[in-house]
Length: 103
Length: 235
Image (cartoon, rainbow over all chains, first blue to last red; front, top):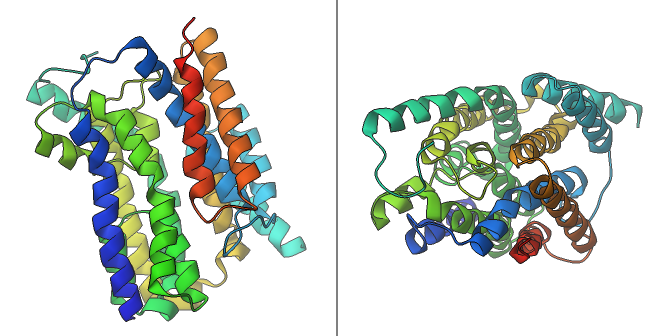
């Protein structure tokens, strides 16, 4: 439990520092063309990275493909069909639950 | 649309915050369920109070699950901290992306930067490299509330919810990020800009999947941000 409190305290301060560094260093600026070109791509790159990471990551790192892949496939259909987000997420969870039960 | 610099009238700003709350409302239920899963899994490892305090102070699903999985496996606090930090390092990259769009003095900008999480970052992105500061703050509100509420419910309900995988909770994050990615790509101007954004997404996914078998938790995600440098090439 002491380990838990230490983890919480350090993560709290470090996360706050991560989030403030950019805003403190670069507030209220007009962007040059090159800077805007780079910043524009940060969201697509990181979101795609998170999709892959959250689908495949194992309990202690590495790659562990499992029922989440079925959930992601169903989520892709939901996104293409332009279903509301909540429906997409619910269908993905249902698909992963079904795949987990079958596996 | 207000420029990324200069003062934004207070009334306008507050209405953007309300807009942010509205667009992020659909995230409330999935976030609540993930919070429940975190509370259920964290209680046997940390006890009752620490998981709730962690959700209030750290407010990061990915980092909290990463740190928890290490503590649950009997790992040292240092390893759990490192995993959480590496996971949250993506917010450093997001902060540098959002920074230029934030108005006000340093303290005000640092405070507003605390609203950066994956969903608020994605939802406030205008697709042209700038971000809507009001949406950024508003979009975080439903998520904070449901993440904390979910954690409390999970801690109180304990294992009565059962195995989170049995109800597919582990597919919620992937589906959620995929939907945010699709929305993000649509905001990029059709034509060259959208092709570049798609290329950035494919490149980010490729870097992540190739690093996952080798690099520690979190590194494959932050490394993907490097793909954004392809945006340096001007037409």
